[in-house]
Length: 160
Length: 122
Length: 183
Image (cartoon, rainbow over all chains, first blue to last red; front, side, top):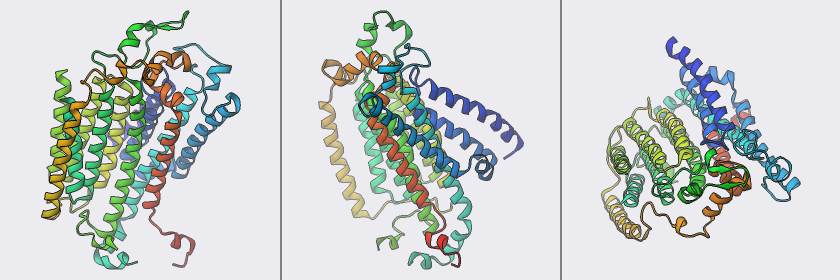
């Protein structure tokens, strides 16, 4: 891509990432939440990938780190659910709101475990979607040579 | 009328998935069906002249913990919205899965045409 | 509500073009048009959460679809399957469409949903008690992370499975070759 696209996308990427974090954090007050925010976080890295190419993004946020973030989000969500079982007596109960910290409605820190679950869902959705698109891009980059070989002799690999 | 148009959209997607022989076209048909189903579920909960299921600061009385009746009587159904919210993200994941199957098939056989991929039949 | 019907008809026309056009890239772009029209319709139906999620998911889905279709030759595959199968499936689809039209007549009027007429519906309890039960002012969030959090757990599982499936399908080297460096 040209230098204009690269410069603009490196600035805009930060704003998109910030917007995603805002959407996740205020998901219990305004429209949005973990799903939309996570997809926005992934799309900021996808913009970077479209402008700079796959290797640049893979050095910034490698696939192994993304898969670990994916597992971390799922683990945090399950951990919150199990903490509800331990502290509140029921799986997935909102124990922070009901027993320890009710908070004030319309405040940013309120609603107990809902913002924490939103963060876990956001990390999980963003990391997994980024991983999928990184894998798609990696396959296209690697598959050029074997494709031509297959086209020249299609029967060999088909009968394996 | 609105439900019928939504069902027509679903049938167009089903036609595309059943009749076409291009793999990417079949995927597009499934995506169109997903849109139609999501739209239908949201339309089932719409109230004429309703408001979004988000409580504003002026509609809540902090002292008595009472919610204003204009929200209680006019809010649209929040339950299908919560279900569709998860289904949209799942549809993106399944779209990536289907597209990866298409790309893999293209790399192996050199075509998207499902009638030419005879070797898949075992 | 005229805008609502105009958008719905726009989506149907875009779907017909996406199905019938010969060029795959045009079909993908028409599907994107359906998605953005659907996002506007969600906004008109008072579902801002869904509208926001739909519009960002649509962008990522378009990136995935365009990456699959661009720079591949043979994108001009046209025509349908063999004649008899096509006719049979079109007849069956037409019958299903007529049956669905009959079912559409039995549905309640658009704009007067079932849950508003029944005080014992679960949605009424969510609307009335959502804020005091969970503390979240966004009722949709209070449903999918508190009342029905099992749905979200299942969603996380399905997404995890889809990602693992896509990664396993696209893995370029086979396991045999990874374990045995001599091959």
